Image (cartoon, rainbow, N blue to C red; front, side, top):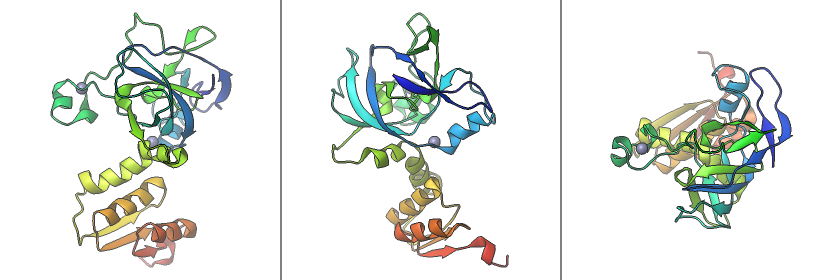
Length: 235
Ligand SMILES: [Zn+2]
Ligand SMILES: [Zn+2]
């Protein structure tokens, strides 16, 4: 399959032919239909966070199941899925108390098993257990969620990172309640998702703040009640 290879910070990604292993255990092979380009990927390219090269970045994706490992019961080929970067084991102390995001034994291939991704015979590191800047992804089944076939996958992909980040900031972190006032500073993908989450939560005033007029207009379409240009306000 073709994939965009990360060679290290401050170097351009290159498109290469990569070998991807067959699914074993609870792994699922997914044909990537859409992948977002999240700013977190850019952090690694800019060297702000370390990640060992060669690797395939990308972690906001959706696709269609091509084949499944022998222990997969939840998915069959043809299923439409959204990929999630928080793969979890499902049986550690954290998972069993509903905190799968803190899982301490995330399922990865053992060093005695063949690598998932190879380039010219050498292992390629999988990013966030996904590596979605590629035509195919080999993912543990806990990192996939099945969606309806009529869900557009280019929008479904965004649920894998930006939408979840924004909506869960509303419901889990800020715990917005009906009638609350919410101000959202920055109206990129996450900010627009915060606005939609605040709207779902029943916030009365949702104030969208961004210097870019297109973003402010978009925020008013998805639930903001007021939009403010911070450059035009005397603070
Ligand atoms: Zn992301
Ligand atoms: Zn766990």
